[in-house]
Length: 252
Image (cartoon, rainbow, N blue to C red):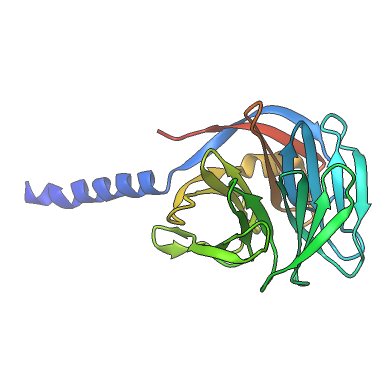
């Protein structure tokens, strides 16, 4: 029996590794048009409306998009000195980050009138909220939980997968008690525990990247929005001509 043990052990550990690194996948529910000129940095769905933050200096904007056509129903151009980033809702407001200006803008959600600004240290990448705190990514493996009224840091978590820090966390969305995060230049989304920072699973969206038909190297997967009222999950990417409604298919 001893001579069979190495084979058995190899198969056993192979099965364990396969299980540990299994990735969830998806099915497409519906495909919508998306403005291929939108350098998507933040996406949020609130009260039946899709809001988007687009980046690049001189092209940054805050938009309310028509889901069926991809056209902007409402748009606010951002001062060219700012590179807009993540976006989330808080009450009747929208909060928008900037990349390197250490500044967040707070707008009235209905008129897009700027109400105030906040300062934060480091870069701004993605933003979401859990009903208690704003959650900010800055391109590192750290997520900061912020007081929505003062932007003061309440706590931090380090995101890791099997003990390895997951860096370049980008656009965020809070869904069913978990944080979903794009990873810059990766074709998958991380599902993260907000309590521990551990990656619960990965969602492989490489098929969507291929379907989007983009060739620009900067047209990466970025943009997650959740319609809580109708349990719909939307994803897109920078400069993508399509926005997808998907259902997650979890691996057994």
